[in-house]
Image (tube, rainbow over all chains, first blue to last red; front, side, top):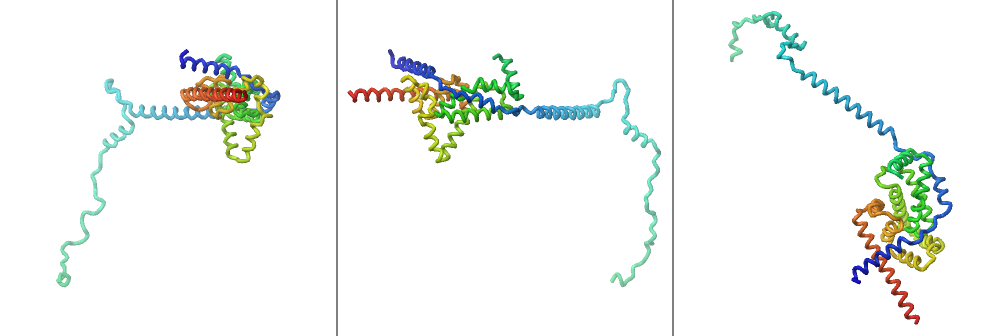
Amino acid sequence: MQPEQHRSADTEALEARLRALPLPPVPHDLESRLLGRIPSATPARKPWRAAWVGVAAAVVIVCLLVIVARISRDNRRPDVASGNITRHPNLSAGRDVDDVAVAPFRWPLDETSPMSAATPISAELLN
Amino acid sequence: MTGRDDQRFLADLRAGRPEACAELVRTHYQAVYRFLAHLTRDVHAAEDLTQETFAAAWQRLGSFEGRATLATWLHRIAYTKFVDAQRAVCRHAESMKQTALMNAPSSDPFEAVAADDEARRLYRALEELNPQERTLLVLHYLQGLSYREMATVLDEPAGTVKWRTREALGRLRAVLGEEVTENATGTTSKR
């Protein structure tokens, strides 16, 4: 027999011996002790955590929908082909302002100066 | 148990139903105890650690995701408890005396079962291995876990676990060989 084969047979025999080892006895009262220590309420998974995640997700989705709806409304183009152009109320207000006759601009100050320019400067002041 | 039954059983466990918890104990406590008995070599330590294992299981049940089997999960907790206990023993010099007590013949769980010479020799050889090697052989050959399950228990890659188990088996064979040689030498010298 080859050494490798012999070694393999040895290993298999040892594995079989290990698997066939007698099991140690279990104490009789261990089961009852373990059963007696089962808590009345084990900490189950917290359902409120999942509920919170659901509520947060719903809020985020609603916010996104509102934002998208506003953007699409603002970007809505006028229907040029059909000629039904609806003017934005602000724009029509602007046109109304344009149509009103604008009064000529007047300076808030008098145009004529109360001072006379012909006041002579005395010679003393010039020296 | 079918997959559907497993799911229902898990749901019952997570809901904390007492009858499901009792079934978990009845199904797995012997395997957990025997695993710990092999690791500790002490009846009382194995009992205490089994109780600690199930106490921890009740606490962690909510976070059990069901990726491993319940048996593997319980073995993992039991192994962690054993490692923690070993660390505690090593930390306190006083506890070294307890270690000596742990190996006292009166509390050896294999004394009664290893009636025949063959089993006794094998148990003695297992005792001579270091705890890591013994853990690997116990998990695979005595507890019947696959390499993948062992990888989950020991938190190591399955390939490493397989290689280390082979190494441990080689060590055991060497220990048994030495024992045979020693016995043969002893017999020859007596003659």
